[in-house]
Length: 256
Image 1 (cartoon, rainbow, N blue to C red):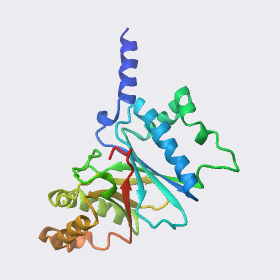
Image 2: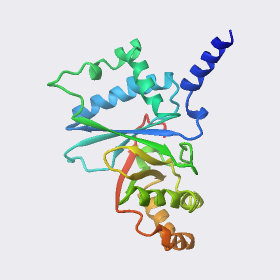
Image 3: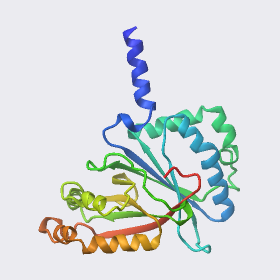
C-alpha cells in the first residue's frame, strides 16, 4: 500500500503543473511559415488542439505571440512560450499527446499534413532555465487590450561561458532584476538558455501597454542612477557581444 501511495504522489508531482519546482524551465518554439495559409493552419492547431491538450495535462499558462512586422515579411512566425517544472516534462507531455485520442482528432489537419502540403516550413526550439531571482513565470499587469500591448523578447549573447555567467550574475546578484521590477517593466521571465542555436546566451521578456510606454520605460532605465552605477562596474564590462530584440503581440488565445 505504501508503494502505491508513493507512485501516486510521484505522478501528481510530475503532472500537476510547475508549482512543485523551485525554478521553472521554459520552452520557446518558433514556427516559420511561408505564407498566411500555413500560419493559419498552424495557429488553428495550437489554439484548438495543442493548447487544450496541454492544459489537460497541467500546463496552466501558455504564451502565444506574433512578431510585429509588416504584412510583406518573407516568413510568417508564431512564438510559443511554455513553462514546466523540468525538461523531462516537455517530453512527457509530447508522449501523452501522442496517445490522446481527442488531441489526435482535434489536430488532424496539422498532424496528418502531407509532404506536399505542410503546415510550416520548419520550427526551432529553445530550452531555458529561469533565473534564481525570478524563478517562476509571471503574468504582466497590463490594462490595454492584447492588440495594443508590446512584448519585448531579448536575447543576449556572450563571447564565452565565463563572460556569460557574469551577465547572468549581473541580473541576479548584481540587482538588474530588482531594477527592472522597481521601474515596472512587467517582466514575464528571465532565463538561461540551455539549448538553442545561439549560445552562450540568456533571454528575457518584458511587457508594456504600447510602444510609447516601452520607450518611456527604457528611457527611465538608462537614466536611472542604479543602472549607471551597475553598468560601470568593472566586473560587468563587455559581458554582451550581441543583442537580438523581437517585438511581439499576444494572440487573443494567449494566456500571457
